[in-house]
Length: 359
Image (cartoon, rainbow, N blue to C red):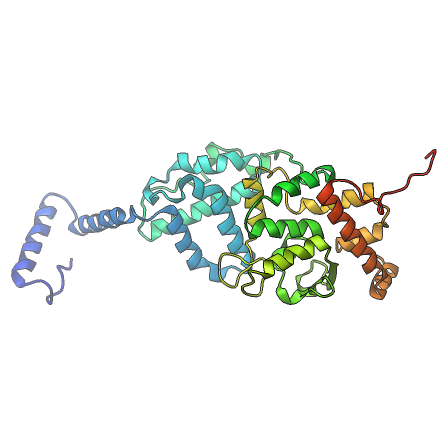
């Protein structure tokens, strides 16, 4: 057993330390284990100021370089912010017990079993990391095998609660009126997504060099499209107004910038916004279905125009027409009709299907 460096302790002090160690041995106590326990206790005491949120940030910082996709980082940060931090994010690590873990994951276990399972696993990984770092001791309260499996049903056995993923098109005007009362970039981005019927990732990743203000056009490059093909989107007056408003506070490459410099909004931005609005019974992606239903029910636009507006795959003839530009102009008319419907909640007269008498 080392007694310390000769540059720090004198011979007399070393003898005192040796005598104290011999007394422990005489009492049947391993002096090395005793010293290790004292150090661990001091480290644990110091870690009481270390919160779960801080440990999470340390874990993410240590592991994100090994994650394949930036979406992994967004998923970790988003689920922790949504489901864990409000419960025990700011509590000291030693305070995190089974009760708190259950309080975080039990409410979503049957509603969103896949998400809940991932949240549990992330909590477990962070607490394991904290244990190895000496910031906490004891069993991991988020462990599944032999622990939480006794309290929760297996996710494969859970029948998720069904929610309406899409808002009925008859409610879109009221929803947008509420959305426009919300402050923040996320609210403007969601409004833009609704008006353009674009996918969430396409909107969040929108860059200024994709916007053509003069031609009221948003061109999404092939590498950002699901189908791997460039997609041109005509901007309605309402959609263009949002982009123009964002340009007044332009900073960086992204139209809808995130909190971190040079980064777009998080993938969780829309989810968190809908939760704040207490409208999380449907998803941001579901607004594409809202648009599609409105097209089919309230307009006379051909189905291929709708499918092109949604960037779905279409036949070769339609693709050829698209290249000539005629369907693009029809999609511009469709975009304006949709914007007017969203503003007033009434079908656009020019786009309403005229039913034949006796039909």
